[in-house]
Amino acid sequence: MGLRLLYLIFCRLLGCFLVLGRSAAANNAEILALRHEVAVLRRQIERP
Image (cartoon, rainbow, N blue to C red; front, side, top):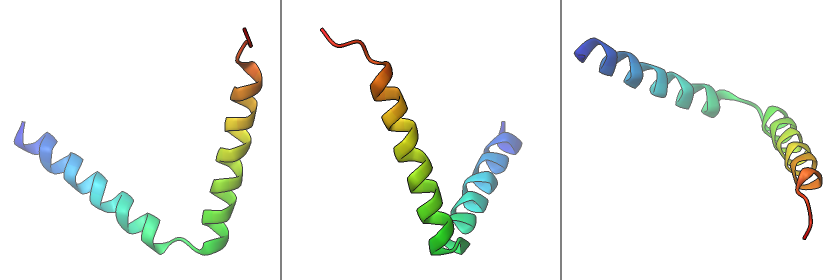
C-alpha cells in the first residue's frame, strides 16, 4: 500500500511539472480541443 501511495504521489508531481513546463501554444491548442469536444457533446444532447 505504501508503494502505491508513493507511485500516485510521483505521478501527480510529474503531471504538475509537465503542465508548468508547457508553452502557451500548447495550452491554447488544448483549450481549443476541449472547446470543440464540449461543442460536439452539446449537439448530442436531445432537446425537450
